[in-house]
Amino acid sequence: MDFPKDLKYSKEHEWVKVDGDTATIGITDYAQGELGDVVFVELPDSGEEFKQMDAFGTIEAVKAVSELYTPVSGEIVEINEKLEDEAGLVNQDCYGDGWMIKMKLSNTSELDDLMDADKYKELVES
Amino acid sequence: MTEAKKTPYYDKHIEAGAKIVDFAGFQMPIQYKSINSEHLRVRNSVGMFDLSHMGEFRVGGNDALDFLQKMTVNDVSTLEDNQIHYNCMCYPDGGIVDDLLVYHRGDHFLMVVNAACLEKDFEWLRQHLEGAVELENLSDQTGLLAIQGPNAENVLAKMTDYNLSEMGFYWSTEAEIAGEKVLFSRTGYTGEDGFEIYHKPEIAGKLWEAALEAGKEFEIEPIGLGARDSLRMEMKYMLYGNDIDKTTNPVEAGLSWIVKLDKGDFIGRDVIAKVKENKPDRRLVCFELQSKGIPRHGYKIFYEGEEVGHVTSGMYSPVLEKGIGLGYVPRKRSKSGREIEIEIRGKRVPAVIVKPPFYKNGSLKK
Image (spheres, rainbow over the protein chains, first blue to last red):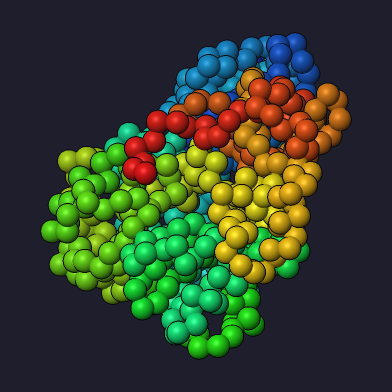
């Protein structure tokens, strides 16, 4: 399992990559492995606003469906359109081409609620 | 809760990197690598399954045939030595106790039942014992390995001297596989050609290795319960507990073909005969989603805005590349081609009723 050091992680198994006031968000290697083959990803539209821990979309795997939660509050500025036709990217490259949304952060202090790679690794391996 | 049992293949699953889940009281592999790729491996070449969780009952004695005739809906008297058929047991109200296979083994019969129903079935049978019948539960001393796919015969042929080309679908024999005497049959739950091998638990490791070796050139892979479920669903093979149970009768489930009313009396006959005569109120249908989404067990089915039933089994079909499902709808709404809607998380998604099976190109030999 892979836990890139430059990312922050939520308890709901999402990763966040911060660049200024923009956060790129996806699901972790652990999450994609647990879900198995991802078939569809339902994402919101650009411009929609979410609070921390709101459900922003759903992910349908062969065996199960699960909700996606925003680890931070903000406005969607971009979604990964590629997932519309290639949901399997989430399995193949969850930290790269399988990213899901980009948000403009409305409250950067929420980033403190997230875990670093070591802490997250501890969580999933415990 | 007692701890879930391990099958004789448990160590092999761990070795192969399986994700293990508790299924019907057994620690079973749900998948090794990916449900999708395992599914396609069986459709395109060959896969091997540990099915040792299934239940096996030996039914012997002079009155064994009469007993099975009373307990099941199909006509066991038509079976020849070594022949097998699909069958089910019903309650007096026509509800299904379990679906199963009956093997004619010469001087006795073998019933193969669902793991989840094993104890209930045995108790049901035991309560109805009558005459000279010996009923024995062989489940704990029986391992079961299935080899399924268009290359199944090619793989098994390398493991036995028995002439497989002469073996018809739903026939069984005792022969040597990998140097060990076993009972095996040309049967399966995938829609593909295939075999199921019943054996002593001690030789599980040996059979597993032999199958991997013989199947190497055909890229054989172990297949988990996830793909077993998606393979059976593409064929509209029913899963007890989802598509059929004590609240459904064989007629509405589309199993009239195994109900033999003219064989004499059996448990549930009166009710089933009436349902057959008056036609059932509802039918189990197959449907395909017409847009994105995956129907799942319990989702509501709508017809012209009115709730008419629910999904009993649903998933993403790796071959059709769309959401497919089974569910009961009123008989008058059950014709293929009808448009229905499935409610997925509050949204109604269009679907169309289709003729079974979903997958029509299986290698299964009739």
